Amino acid sequence: QVQLVESGGGSVQPGGSLRLSCAASGSIRSINEMGWYRQAPGNQRELVAVIRTGDTPNYADSVKGRFTISRVNAKNTVDLQMNSLKPEDTAVYYCKVLVATSAYRNLAVWGQGTLVTVSS
Image 1 (tube, rainbow, N blue to C red):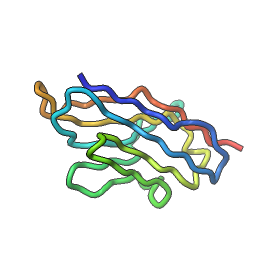
Image 2 (cartoon, helix red, strand yellow; image 1 turned 180 degrees about the vertical axis):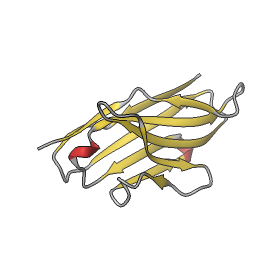
Image 3 (tube, helix red, strand yellow; image 1 turned 90 degrees about the vertical axis):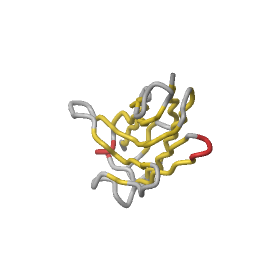
Image 4 (cartoon, rainbow, N blue to C red; image 1 turned 120 degrees about the vertical axis):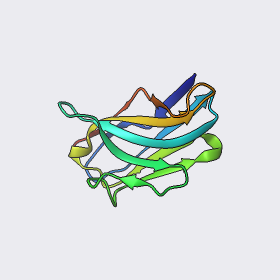
């Protein structure tokens, strides 16, 4: 079994910064991909940023230049540094990983979500 624990959400004024963190634990043989998604009220869940093993990070156009994803392989963690936040960044942010376990080659696991609110 694989678990994800997210932290770092909250409320911030426009132009502010927040840092989200996600830690994966459990019966993990390897992690193929770690990323962040978000879902605003009334909208579909969308990709924010993803980092695949051995590849460079990919970002949604709406966050390029403002958000930075980083991964610490030794700790199975992935962070999302969010700068210059805008009201339209308000959403529930979800961590997602693709992991290999003894039973699965590419198992998708989602975190519980953390709310980010950007408002003056």
